[in-house]
Image 1 (cartoon, rainbow, N blue to C red):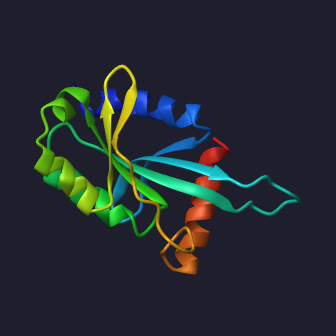
Image 2 (cartoon, rainbow, N blue to C red; image 1 turned 120 degrees about the vertical axis):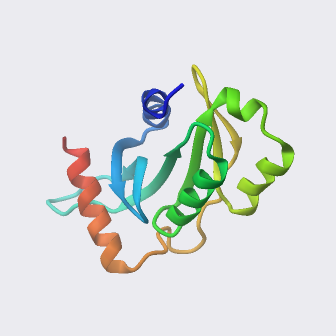
Length: 147
């Protein structure tokens, strides 16, 4: 299985949960998949973001995907790593604990998506990055939602 084969399954999973989907958006680096939801729009203003989820796709680089997903946590509400189900099935308990320790979720992707480790939602203001970055992200995701 290749990374680009994981993407449509992740996209469908996010859409089934009511999220809009974007790809390759700049956070701490380029994030593979972003799921996001806006408040209801009133007037002409761009509505507030309700939740933003980052998902990094990897085939077998556990250390790399944990680092990428951990770095994304500052910019989003929840951050996940998504790997093929076949890789997750043979993962050692110690490896799975690394996801939990870094507060990064783990998704097993096969025909469907299974949550192996739940992502820890950021505390307080749902986005931890500075206000200016939040506004830029909000505008960027609004443009993505209109495509």
